[in-house]
Length: 286
Length: 270
Image (cartoon, rainbow over all chains, first blue to last red; front, side, top):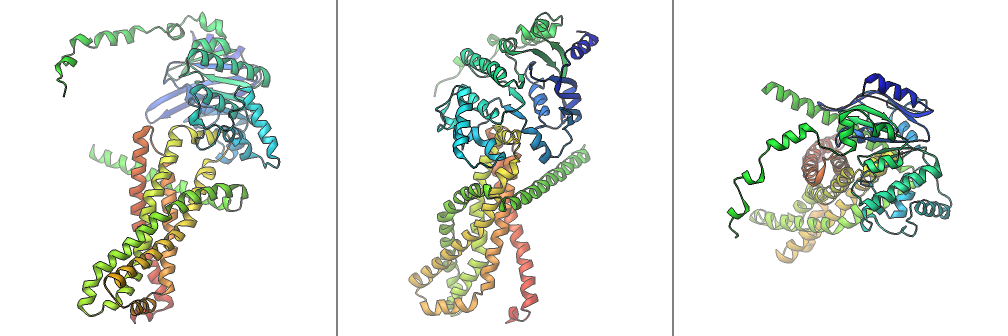
């Protein structure tokens, strides 16, 4: 895609933005992960960030909430620049966010109810414990896990853990929910349950949703807008149809799950199994 | 190349020291605030149970063996000079001033420090610490402050247990096995051990406890990913805590000796 085409797409999608990043760069040592990303996230919409593994998707959304600080560039939440705020002020900003981590990141030492009420107990002086229990029940009902309050994370399946983590992420009624690979590691049915949950929460709560994924089925289902990252830069930005019909070979390879010529060449050059000198039958059993 | 490598290592070391110093400062501030925040008390209480109460048996066993071993080792030398009844002074001063605090702290560095690093390290690699942060909570206040306060408050108490058992262990071997006169043993002990000696040992506990907690938490917070990263962090935490205990012990011995000589200049010559 030509640069001018991309610029037009970004401009045209500029509704009321809630998060903006300007010329965002992030490097770890000599490894440049994000290389000048400009992005504006529209309020109340679902934006899906796609891209191959290791392209910087998770780093990007961690910059949105300043869990990682950018090497250079700016991060804005509403009308406030937040990447240069001290931690204690950032903590107040982060109360507007909910973050679903890839593996859930539930606290092992706390029960399901303890996990869900964690942010509430941290930020509010609770005088009526019954109200907190009701709130926990409501949030767990929203993710279909009411009745699991006393369970511990170790006793839950991967999908259930993610749903509890989602209940925890929405406990404070955040304005923005960030999902880091919500369907990774789940079977297709469980993955679709998570997709339906994301849609349901978006409908019911009307919050801004940002999802990082490489699951294209999920992306097409939930996205109002899809942004593709490649080698630390945005190479495509538009709705599902726009991405499906994108002219870039890199985009087409990714969305259709097709291996590139370069990767194929590497595979062809490597030795075949038959050429390997050491064979299992050469080994004597002890 | 060599100079480049040395330079890189030096800069890395200084940066790491800076990060550690910043972490210590954050921990001190967070611990201070937690003291005045009643909502933190249940967490401090839970950590005191885990860190302190459950360490009592192991610390008592350590103390008892220290006292008993000292009695066995020192008896022959003193008996050769006909001074075996002075054995109590030697054992009890050694136990309350040096060996009790140091060995109890080393046991805590292994038992508590390792557990703290492993727990926080696992939380770090499974993104639980980032999850705390993402919900607008300071992870140092939530995770580190209760552990630091628990170690700070309970290490001196555990040292008292170690001292007590060291004294009884020494007494048991001296009187029951080596047949030293019990009355003489206690009389010489009472004349040789001052409240100052006991206080020095207990005060050392605050420093040892603080060092163990802060080092272990720091190693947990900064550990690398994977099981190997957590294991490596635990080893580093123990080694660093152990060296800190010995270094602090030396520094505190110099300081306390200076204070003692300032207030009681003639007593040490007697």
